[in-house]
Image 1 (cartoon, helix red, strand yellow):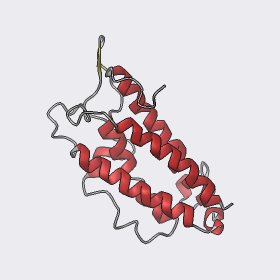
Image 2 (tube, rainbow, N blue to C red):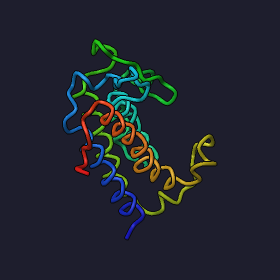
Image 3 (tube, one colour):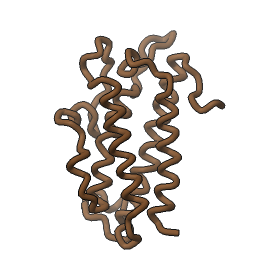
Image 4 (cartoon, helix red, strand yellow):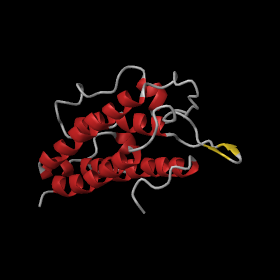
Length: 176
């Protein structure tokens, strides 16, 4: 079995969990910080999480040498809203972030393409040295980076959505 098939199998499970978390989130709450008895909880809400993740599918495609990377890049203006180091804002009026449908579409399109490219990639691609020096210490190979981005990175942020759901009183999206 190829490295890409192994990574993609776990990535698909993580992607599926991300989809389940979206199931019953109302669009008018998507960009809102959760509110509890103690007040507004400063955590990442679904709009920020899925917008943030929607930036990274094209990066994975670039690392894999897939020509779809540019075509699937997030719209202009998304990096300041969702990029690493950005702040999750409480979008009470629903005007700060793009609509839920646009954010979810970008996340879905880019990650489906990244999963497909990962599964099809030759093992030699994953064995290549990390081309970005700033990432090399944590992710010495392309495979280490792609594996992290399709599994751990998504799971960490989907866990934030799970906590957001609980604070919002929505309960588990996974049925347990």
